[in-house]
Image 1 (cartoon, one colour):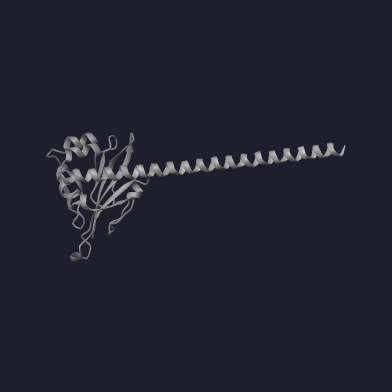
Image 2 (cartoon, rainbow, N blue to C red):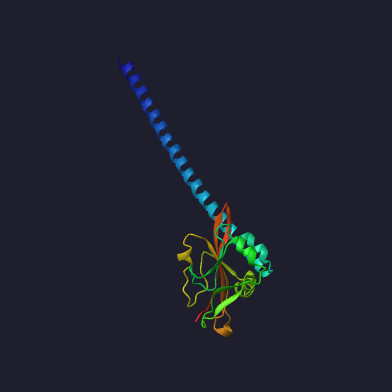
Length: 216
């Protein structure tokens, strides 16, 4: 009888040990799966962010190259197909006054002698009236921005003009191409060219071209 009880006790102990092992192993596998899933999700998010940064930067570089080479017609391939492109003379974007060209209008007027009012010059208030091509050549690309310092989603140039880019485009990526001012003028002759991007059908297009400089 004692032997029988001893055998039953041993079987019971072995059974409990097996259940404990299976339970412990089960939790370990589950926890490992959760960790792996979380890791994959974080990695995926990082890959998307890196991809977006590369796409925006590459588009920025190509856009500046075309401006530098005065290939204005080719610039149209970077203009948003549905929203067109806004031109703002200074950091403060004026939704009710800034000149906006749809993609078709840009192509229609880029080689035209038709003049447009793009805004007012700081200090004098003089209206800036010129052709689209002249505006790109003499105002937008007034400095060699293709060789400027590159910043992404960060403002480098600051002056007296209010900067409301993030208010107008709160969720869109942007770049700043910044040229430092000289010692001769106490650094006040700096210039920046900012481009705002929006995705359309898996590709980034320019929706705003914003110049900035020291203003009175």
